[in-house]
Length: 315
Image (cartoon, rainbow, N blue to C red):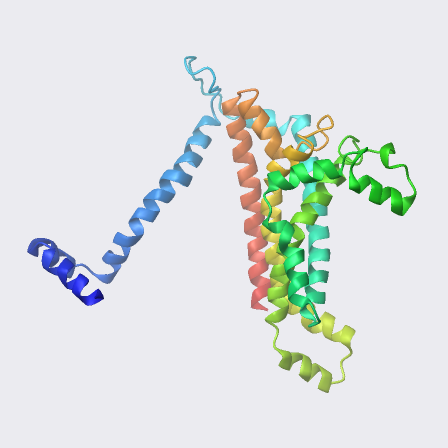
């Protein structure tokens, strides 16, 4: 059936076209297949990036298309780098980023280490742990908003049961001290399974023969953990940190659903602040410069981190 279809296509091809195709090299044919994807990539990713960089040097406002666009040079960049409010959002983002990564790596690796030990109900517990990762961030945000309610929220009652505090005496998303930790808890609950799966893949990639050789050398379990497990799983851990770091740096929907950046601006991350500059204040040129700074920051840090990751993998 397949050969007959190919034969029909071959017979239907004009002789001039068939002769040209026969004269093409393998590299030219490969470029013919790859070219549509490259054009699509340029249209969707590269062109908007170049256009954003161009707008970042202007005072363009998208809600005032008839006003003349003026070239302002580096003024937008200087205003951003000297704006105290933006540095506060950077601090809020750094606090969120560092604590979510630390908690997710510690809890995720611990869960992976336990699940890697074969026990009864292993697959069931793995499925249950992975469930939060399958939910939409908007759904998770609404779900935890109800859990954090001081009057009816189960979270406050659980804290009150463990500590003896009055459940209605505090509000996780309404208090300036607790709100940053509220979004950290939710993101950790949702994305720890992702880190766990990567760590689990790393643990199960370690050959049993290495542990058997260590036992023959009378190495203790603690010694095996630090000299075999940790070094061999470290590249997977670093990969999980890279993925979660990039995703949490641009975290938006989950925080918007939970706190909207409040109370005040205590949980206003850079992505939320960028959205407000672009689509509430309509400072398009300013927001473009802001986006370019964030892009360069993430790209630079990720490049340095990937080099470190490659060095670890080559050891």
